[in-house]
Image (cartoon, rainbow, N blue to C red; front, side, top):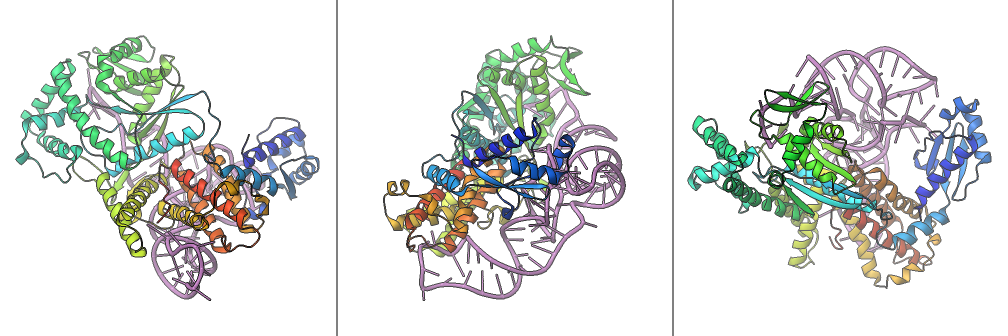
Length: 558
RNA sequence: GGGCGUGUGGCCAAGUCUGGAUAUGGCGACAGCCUCCUAAGCUGUAGAUCGGGGGUUCGAAUCCCCUCACGCCCGCCA
């Protein structure tokens, strides 16, 4: 059973197509509110029906047979209104149940790779954009009915880990900066930073190159040390992500790919494709003037081919492949795409790229320490939330304040990252990141808490509300709120590669609820108290559902 | 230099793919709203040459060309 606004749109498209008698692109748009729920400008039909747009609109409106709504002509435009009784029954009725906005389960797997940060330092606010986008996209795909797996690719054989390992084995505590936080990723990072600085010295550089060579020659002991160190840092990443309500279904290490022989297989296969070339023994692929090396002259593998091997391996266990990547990986991503294409391997990977987060106009960097660590941001956000709660509530228990502060703080962090379109750059500002009003998670959470509060004071059984007649809701503010709720499934369909749309919608929904809250007393209502209560429960469910799509928890108290 | 991306009121964003009827929100500013379900809320006012120029079109923030600014990439690093 389709959601009402989606069904209505399909009906409109079907009718226009039927009347015009051919398949044509039909521009269905959402107009200003007073012009209806949908609008279709008829200009583009003029060339095929050889009439002017006004006449076409008039013809369409005359011949159109709509079950789910009505049409009106306005010059060269058609405006459509959905039937309110249908909308109310379908929307309120269905959102009284959980999982409003979820679509039928389909037999299709999607594998979403996200985070995949270098395991040499804690996550900073810049690379936090990756897991926040990735986890949200995963949640969206689940709602669209996909069988979703999220995966973290652990680059445990890279140069960064070599530098870290050298530092840990050659430096002592007094050589490195003081550790700010007792967490494995922070503890190890200072050794990486120091070793990285010392690399200007030739002897240090040599030492690091020695262990890289040992690792690449397959030395079991060196590989083991690399793995141990990167796993420690990774455990720190996972702890940070857990606070943000993010976890991965699986982890794939680069070392396992090498040990399983996947990299060797990929190199052998790529040798045979036309875009592959050789330069003094080093293999590369080349397209449109881009050249990406796969192996060194000595035959050892390079990062691109290892990632290609990884993607080939991934295609064996999924129907769709999605990577969340920083914009610096665009060429690299294209090389994976080209390699798989040349090998005729499907599915082709899809990419979501995001721009970097800068700090006061400059790029964040682990090496220089010019970063805002995610852990620090989360602590500050939580603390800010606690202050806000204490400033307006004195009736909450200490533990409740702590719980709410964590929920609100983490929500604010996730929201402020996800609300921006991925390809737009973010210049990190504390006052922006800790904004708790307007377009923010706390704004949405607050509406949810208000709805929860009404239901709590009412104290009735929710089952009483399922038999309520939603068509008793007839005030403008009530209808507007229902329409906003009804839009959610459509928003989900649009948001797969644009997760910021969900954040946008969340704010609109909360704002609409707040207006309803202001104008329509629920518990004091005379005739339609139960139908309003039903609307409050609907709103609460959908607010919670939308927040859950964003990985944000909906508190009952704030 | 070449490639990719971004540029919307003082600030931050939506809208750009799929061109349409008055460019949508938030922050900040100013003026208001708690005897009434949580004021992290709500209402109103001021504030926009949609980076700039040209073009296509009945119609351009949206498409095309040129140009400027910023970011990213252009390693037998990852």
